[in-house]
Length: 179
Figure 1 (cartoon, rainbow, N blue to C red):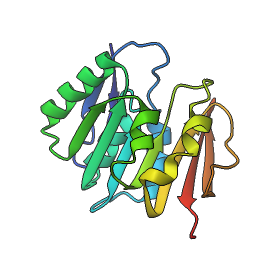
Figure 2: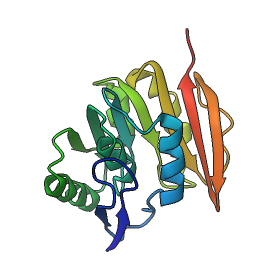
Figure 3: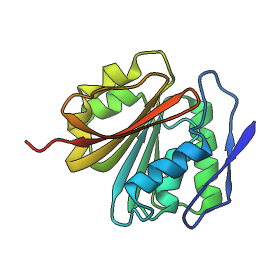
């Protein structure tokens, strides 16, 4: 098990335990700092969805920065248990951890969100499979963060806002286009 630190907000400097699971690679500190600079340091009142949560780094960062509600969706049971332990340790009452398949969760579209984080395992086609379903969980003017090995030029119905690269990580911010 490895550890990553939360880089901002009320839990700044606290660490999350990351189970050693195939394909699990937390978003690097430097990338998270940039993304939350793009989103704004204060997410008060916003609802966030960390789809393919894995380590939970993005969801915990959002909660640490004041998000009103954060849902973390992760399919792997071991990763889910680690997320639940971390939430209990932090007393994170605004976090909801859902142990489910990301595509099925989005297809149901149970709730809509202001910010959605997409950081699935690389090179498995997850972004392409989920993009057509995103409209079911996005509020008007929603922002979508997407991360992958390759640059993502477009996501269905979303306008590109920003792009960055750190090492082998391409990261992007998109916004729901007005109707």
